[in-house]
Image (cartoon, rainbow, N blue to C red; front, side, top):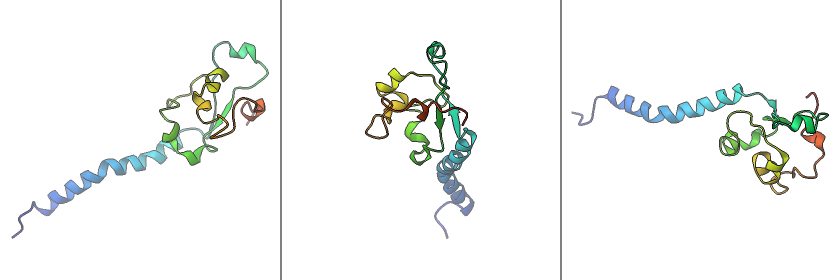
Length: 120
């Protein structure tokens, strides 16, 4: 005779143990597909008047896909578009966290059109 619980109870326990991690793995691609491939970064209030000829900076999720979502979200960026300035980036916040000249090209000294790309 068997000393453990009946077979259906064992199956339920095993499925429960894998249910949460499996759901997280399956949800990540679905969540990633829900976000746009590229988006315009909103400007801080008053920035539009200071630089009217430059379009809003364009951020490409596709270009940064090799890093994975959790490298930036939610530690460096919340899960919603956030306005910020070049001063923020030069101080190592937002894009400047990686675009510091060590991890990736530095924000300072880069041609404006590299990020403020029109009509892409």
